[in-house]
Amino acid sequence: MLSVKKRKTDESNGKTKSSRGAAGEFKNKISGDGYVALSLEDIQNRISQLCHRVPQVPEGGLDADDQKSVKEWASSLQAIIEEFNLLVCCVSPETYKWGSERSGAADQNLNLLSAELVNSQDQISSTVTPRLTNVLAPVVDLVIEKVVITNANNGDKETRENMYCRREADPGFVKLCALILSRNAVLLRQVVLSNFHKIHICIGDY
Image 1 (cartoon, rainbow, N blue to C red):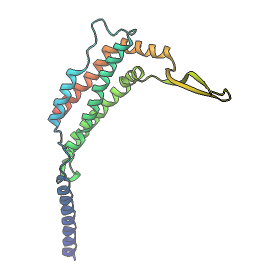
Image 2: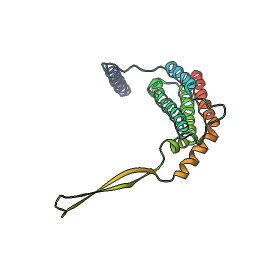
Image 3: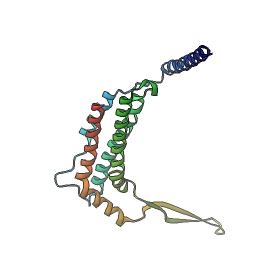
Image 4: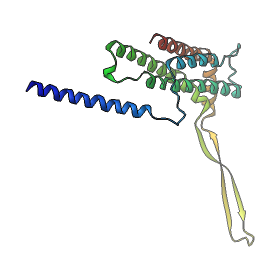
């Protein structure tokens, strides 16, 4: 009786292993899509490169009255943050292992790494991104700029055509957002770089 149960359990385990192996083989056979996985070292190196691309703040600070320069600085920093978030998304596929193939200590280390990744993204998204968005994508209203009236040749009919344009809903608030960004540019840059450096160290520790 016991031997029969043991044999059934072994057979069941064998099926589980073979199906998992088959799934693994199928996954590894995907080709032709140009995909090349990024290793943790690759991700770490790219984060290091991002640190050098974070835009500097001019010595005298950003001029809040120069809307063009403020937007250019905000756009450059936003692009760096977007690339960082995409690199962070590549960490999970690289560290993936099936539960039974990972030891308790390894699982704990991965949880610590994941927590630090989420923490860094949360800090940047809550303190930096909103200030950039307020400058780069202010709220606008669709308003009628002018009305074109066309009369028919016989004078009986009249055609009215509305020409619309987008205008800032609150220009005063937009100027205030530029002022806030300019005033805090140095510390915003510091928040971004400190989290980039932390994740670079965390990946190395992992």
